[in-house]
Amino acid sequence: MNRRILFLLTAAVIVVILLPFLAKTQTHSKISRTLKNLSISGYVHGFKDSSWLYLDDAEKLGTALDSAQVMDERFILKIKNKNNAAPKYYAIRTKSFSEYKFFWVENSALTFSGVKGQLKDAIIDGSDFQRKLESLYRQTKPYEVLIDSLRRNYGTVDSAIWKQILSLEEELTNINIRFVKSNASSVTAAYILSVYCKGWGRKISDSLYRQLAVQAKQSEYGQKAEQYIKLNKEIAVGSSYADFALPDTSGQTVKLSSLKGKYTLLEFWASWCGPCRRDNPHLVSLYDKYKQHGFELLGVSVDISASQWKKAIVTDKLPWPNVMTKKGSDDIVALQYGIFEIPTNYLVNAEGKIIAKNVRGKELAKKLNDLFGH
Image 1 (cartoon, rainbow, N blue to C red):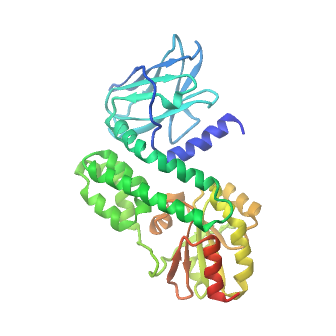
Image 2 (cartoon, rainbow, N blue to C red):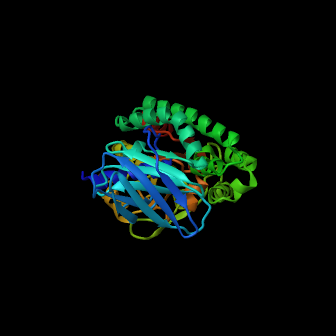
């Protein structure tokens, strides 16, 4: 895999989480905002003269906003300033994508300093937004590393591993909730709430949102959290499903209600989701075994790329109906069902009631065996 592709794949995960790496190096340089532009004056030890560095919008990786050559281990990059006070996420990277650093910029002077071979650990100082998130990241990093390790090893449809992941995620949730509560007057609290609200559910998210200061509520992150709270249906075991209509691979609209009368597994997934793809062979086996006994499965993709979604369906030989949201995980369907992470599933009975959530592996096999007796 070439470095550019590896960089983009790694960065996609970082941007979904949007938490900067913990800084460890020592020297400093200035980042200052003017009325016309943002100047980034950096110090990077170990970079040879004429080495190129690039500045990217973190949401548009690979499309440089500016570039500069390093001279005497220093560089200057500029961004046009639209006088937007909201903190914004950027990345400084090398031409080959072999090194990069993600960081937040707001209306305050910053310092930037890095070392060749350790650019991701560059020091960013002077931004309250950046400082608060790095403080939070020091607490959450151990949990995220362990969860990531377990997910990579989740290839045997092991229910015990999945339960361990869920337990660790609960601990991670508690840390983030405490952060929001203790920083309610800061936009950083609104940001963390906007990132995790779908995973926390409407009740908890609404309670936290109400504790935010007016400035935090009015920020773009506060508004995003508010949108979720308004749209989410708080679907849980024992409640009725929320109907929706989405296009399948041929562009035909499929309604969830059209499957009423069968036990239906509503499976949220994506082509780029490793655990989802590794689980597919087991789901295919269960589908083939029980489809003649009143079992149906509806795959709901939160992909952005329709071509990658369709390719994954063919590659994994998925025989059940498959539909795709129109705006990925920000789609109204994903918001209604509170899809914060994938894979996520709901098992719906013939009457349209949710009877299980996130049931998979051996647990799902046992559930279906109990229902259909085969």
